[in-house]
Length: 268
Image (cartoon, rainbow, N blue to C red):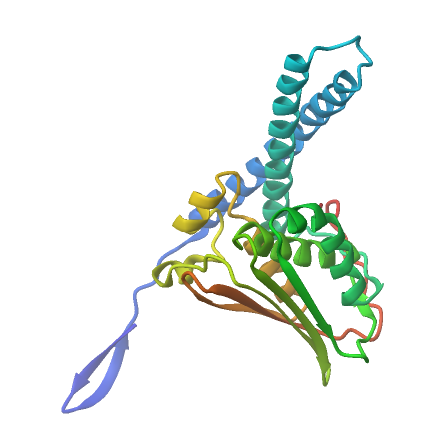
C-alpha cells in the first residue's frame, strides 16, 4: 500500500494485492507429506530398536564385545532417528493445528525434578551445580503433563549440554497474579548476537551449538515456544556469548479444566 501525495497531503492510496492461495496449498502439502512420511517411519524404527535391544541382551545368542560395541552404535543411531521423526511429527501437528491436549492438574516443581533426575548422570559427569528456587505457594493448574514435561526437558537438556564442566544451572519459578513465571539460566557457551533473532526458527542451530553437539535437530525450541504460546503464554531469552543464556517463560494459570482438544495423537 502506497500513498499518492499532493501538496503534502495523501489524496488516495494505491494497493497491490497478490493471491497466495497456491502458496498456502503448497505449504500444506509439504506439511502433510512430512507428517505422513514421519508417521510411516516410526514403525520400522521401533522394530529396529526392539530387535537391537534383544540382541544386546543375548536373546539371539551370545555376542562378542566387538559385536556389542557395533550394536551399541546401531542402537544409539536408531534413538537419534526416533527423536528426529518425533520432532518432525510434532512440528507438522503444530503447523496443521492437530495437536491433542489432555490437561491435568499439575505443578511445575515436580516436573522439573523429574527431568533433572533423568539428566542426573550427565550433570554429575560434568560436575554441574543445579540451583532450584520455587515460591512456597506454587499453584497446581491445568496443563497437558506431556507438553509441560517437553518444555522443561528441552530447556534443561540444552542447559546441561551447552554448559562447560563445573558450570551452574539455575531454575526459578513463582506465581504472580494469574500467571506463573519461570526462568532457566546457565553459564554456558551463549548464543551469538547476530544469530539470536533466528533461535526459535525451525531447523536453526547456532554455529557454536553445532560445534559442541552435532546431533541436534533445531526443532525443540520452535516446538516448545509454539506449545507455550498456544496457551496464551510467552517465551523469550537473553544471552551473551561465552557467559550463558537465560530463558524466561510465562504460563497463564488455568484454574478450571479447559476442554480436551481433539486431533492427532499427543506430542511425544
